[in-house]
Image (cartoon, rainbow, N blue to C red; front, side, top):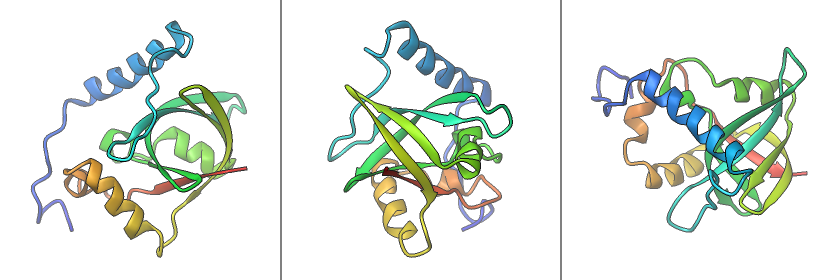
Length: 153
């Protein structure tokens, strides 16, 4: 479905979206991990801290992203606040798929990959249950939004 055939839900200004994620990372840092992460539950997504290796710098890079659990896997979306560019953390994972996620009370080593054509519709539909505007937001982007699976390693 294209942006021309469906009215996209409104989004806050880009500066606000970026500021929110900066504040989320700062909250986690200032409270030494006591605040800023939320466990996923049956009816809601959670927030996790994703530690990747920078594809250019080779240094640890950190992002806080929403996720849900799918069996042993964690599922997130490479959406970059619905901006057109791919998020840096996803580009980093494409170059080096091994990463670490911090969840409330624990860390987990994971390996990232994009959902394949058979998995994607089911995982997308589950995300859409958490976010009713998902298809409209995705229509803002010129490329398909990757559904990212983080499997234990």
